[in-house]
Image (cartoon, rainbow, N blue to C red; front, side):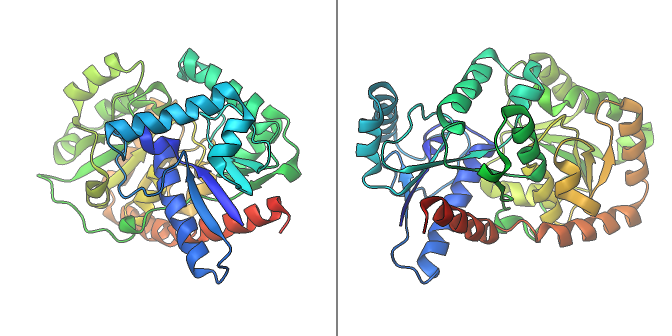
Length: 364
């Protein structure tokens, strides 16, 4: 069976989806190679033979081949299924991303639903993102032969908001890169509370900054608040506060992230909504105590491996920060529980379940 995964994100600036696609594609190829079924072939679209490094800020290819492949995608979108089928070269199952605008004429069609924030919280997205997500729903999600949801919560949101029949969508949890599991801590001048993610409205960082300002001065003197991640949309005012009230590292290269996460005394994640919550699971895998929002998929994913807070309550967030920073014993307990739970999120398992899903969609 020939399965083609849309890896267009490899050519663009992208965060969570790019990391998901990179690790998933590698694990699918490893599973296909070692699964004892020589007929399985995993390809990457558009015409992407190799993807050797994960860089969220840049294309994995040089400028000319990047432009050529994006032009191929544009041609398929503009000219129709015949061009898409030509690019897919006899594919049995095509797993499309949200830049694809055509349904293949020959291959079975699948896709991953990462989150439903465009429907649940349209105010935290740009108008262009909202339009793109609606187009993806109409052109890909509705005609798809099968869909993957990255959490049970995301699956239920898709059923409720998009009217997808339950039998058409399957929960397959994402994974965490092996480098995060028991990563060696990176040294910093003093203990720190860490946030990782794009600086954008959905991540709710102004509330975190308000809560941090409410923490007792002696604790703020003892611990740094460190934030890592690229600047996103509508973030200028938040960025001004971050630079004034916290330590801002900006985009941290992927190779440096496990050590940064593992070195934190506490990982805090005040997001208003997540489809899976990669940073939370990465911190759990790295043996770090987690304080997470009690929203969307996060309690499902983290379970007893995190402490929780109402992300809209400054007082509750502040109280939880104080409680955990004052108690190394509680942080150690949470870290142990989180590390145990993180074993549920291995890419090998995700790839194995995904191959079963693809075979069923293809009728094999």
